[in-house]
Each structure stands twice: as structure tokens, then as C-alpha cells.
Length: 296
Length: 175
Ligand code: SF4
Ligand code: SF4
Image 1 (tube, helix red, strand yellow):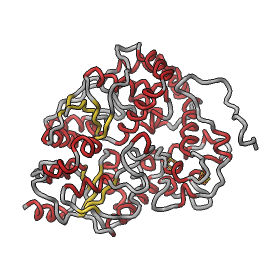
Image 2 (spheres, helix red, strand yellow; image 1 turned 180 degrees about the vertical axis):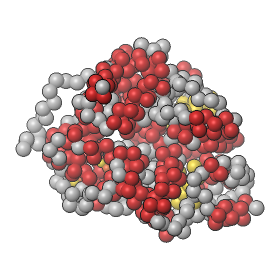
Image 3 (cartoon, chains in turn green, brown; image 1 turned 135 degrees about the vertical axis):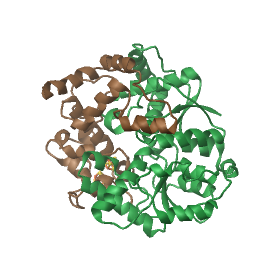
Image 4 (cartoon, helix red, strand yellow; image 1 turned 45 degrees about the horizontal axis):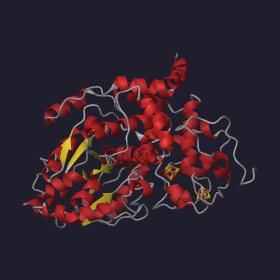
């Protein structure tokens, strides 16, 4: 099973340890990743795609075209990249007039969008191409007794007819992925509320702190040992954002966040050190000891 | 108030791919019921910003202000589509707010961080600056060093679509 790896920006620039873990874990479960040097930013949905649609559509179409030239579907590691690339891919497959217009723009480069491939988030690849039953067979050390608050994030859920991932009102796919590793999905309130990325960037810091703080408290009340995410922006909010929110709101809680592929790595025999947990801002002794007991 | 079946005034037809959504009619059918914002467990995250309340919701702040494209709160919207999915009256606040953002960007009034990000992307291929600390981390992890990506193609694309001209508007203001 071969894919063109679309890394995006956030992971390679700000969370390179997730790239490291993704390359190795995905490789071990049989997903062959091919790199493409010419990929650019997807481009970012909220900052770019909304504000200049034609340029953003052309840039996304160019990225898709590069994977078409390589003959692979795209695998992404980020909800935002998936949101833009999937929407553009679907729009251009459907609307031949827009496709012609975009290809006219792309004629300035050496690329042409043809509409021959699919774009998939890695969570979709795990569910659809590998299957959770087969994934569960890769688990060497079931994470029994570990309670995990799964935060799916917004942009992979909606619009559901394009993203085709899960129910935006009651998402369960990430919980099923957590359960496949032997861990226990936590049932917490505010599960579907955004991580607060734009409040952090374009609003007052205190608003973002309150939102992150409220979500963390809901996760803690539900008995979670840690959080799991499938998007780097969400990761950042629950790691660096958690550090800032708990400090500012004087909250006495620490819920480490793990990118799902790190959690998968742990269940496959990796140590906390192997998944580069040491690079996280929020670490908790209680969590480390519990994982130590489970993995022993 | 325009009749609901009347076509909104949109001026000259915009270029394919850059059409604004129909703003007026959609905004007018909002009943200000608040559903899109007040459900604490599942609705608009921007409602959690300190200055909104159940009577003055985030969505209504965006839809109802005198100069909507100049309202700095529009940039808080994350395009999560929850408002659209929850609205019982088929208003799509997300589409309205996205159109306001595009209008604001076109008119040279976008949030400076947005303009900075777009410039960053078309000149380097990345949404974030490549920093010394990230290259040190990558080296330590044994990952390849990052370099600028396809900036020549990005420059050609943004010239052809007119983005370069739009960005120049911001540069005139800066100088
Ligand atoms: S957009 Fe819809 S849900 Fe929101 S206040 Fe208006 S009518 Fe109510
Ligand atoms: S799309 Fe924007 S306005 Fe609608 S619920 Fe999400 S953040 Fe709020």
C-alpha cells in the first residue's frame, strides 16, 4: 500500500518528532510512504483558502497534480491539509469549468490537475485501507486500563459529505481507533468543541485559555489519563496551549497529549522515549508511571 | 428588507473560483435564535470569547454589525461548520463569514496576521518561518533539513490569479 506523504507545514517545522514517529510507525504497519520534494503548504484553510480561493485552489491543485504524477493517492497527517486538499479535489472533479480555469493558472507551471487520485487522512487509511481488525493484530502490548480522551478536531468532520470521516455530532471513529489498541476511550463533555486555534491566534489570549481549560477539566472529570489527537494544531493547543491555560487559570491538572500514531507506537512496543514524549511541554509523572506499568 | 426570493445585488460577476457567496439574503433570514452559539457542549467555539453572551452571540455579532467586513471578530471563525449544521433556519453563517473575510482581504483590510501568513506561504511554501530551533530539532531526530519549496511556481500562480496585486495594496499601506 503506497501513498505520497503530504507532511504540510506544522509537523515538519514545529513538531518534527511527530514526523519521525509517523514515518516509522506507518512504515511498520505496511504503509509505504513516498516523498515529494515539490509539495508546498496545502495551503492553510483559515488563513489562505477562505481569503483568496482561486489562488488557494490552484496551489492545492498543484499539490494534488504532483502526487498524480507520482501515481499515488495522498496521505496526510493533519486535519487542515485534509480539509483543503479534499475539498479542492472534490470541487475540481465535479466542476469542469473551474478545473479549466485552474489548469490555465497551472499552465504557468509544468503541472496539470487531472483528477485521478484521492486524498486521505492517515486515520482514514487506518480505518479504510488497513482496517481496525488488522491494526489490532499489530498490537503487541495492549494499553489496557489507559483512559484516553479522543479529540477528533473540526476539519476532518465537516462538511461531512466531503470529508466522509465521522458523525460531526457524535464522533466515534477515533474512540474505535483507541479501543483497537486495548485502551479505554473516555466519554467527556465538550468533545466536539474546537481546540481553540483561531481564538489563540486572532483573539484575546484569555478566551483561548478559558476554552482549553474548560475542555481539559471535562476530560479530567471523565477520568482521562491522557488526550489523543490526529491533527497538529489540536496537538499544539493541548500541549503548549495547556501549559499556558493551566498557568493562567491556576488549574492543577496535567493531561499529556499524544498524537494517535505515538499511542499506536506504544502499543507496538515503542517506549515513551521512542515516541519522543520527552519533547512535549506537558508531562505527568502519574501518566508515565501508569504507562510504565502497562508496558512492563 | 429585501424579499426572500429576490436575487442579492452582487455587482459585476466575479472571476470563476473567486465568487462571493450570496450574503444579504442568508444574513436576513437569521432569526437570532442563538442555537448556533449557545449550546455549550457542541456549537461555535468563538462564543467562548469573553465578550459574547447568549443574547449577543458571536454569529450575530458577525452578521449584524454595521460594517461586517470591517468587524475584527470575523477572524475568530475557524470554519468548523457547526453553525451551519445546527441552524434550524438554513442560514449558513460560516459561508457568510467566509465571504466577509474574502471581501475584507480584497479591500485591503484583512487581519495583519492573515496577510503575513499568505505572504509567507507564497514566498517560501511554508505557513510558518523556518527557524533555527526547528532545524536543530530535525537534525537531532535524523530528519532531512527543510528548504524553501517551489517558490518559483508559487510566484507564477499568484501573479496569474491577481494575488500579487492584492498583496501590493497592503504594501502601499505599510510604507
Ligand atoms: S444563524 Fe441560525 S441558528 Fe444562528 S442565530 Fe441565526 S437562525 Fe439561529
Ligand atoms: S464555522 Fe465559524 S461561526 Fe460557525 S460555528 Fe464554526 S467558528 Fe463559529
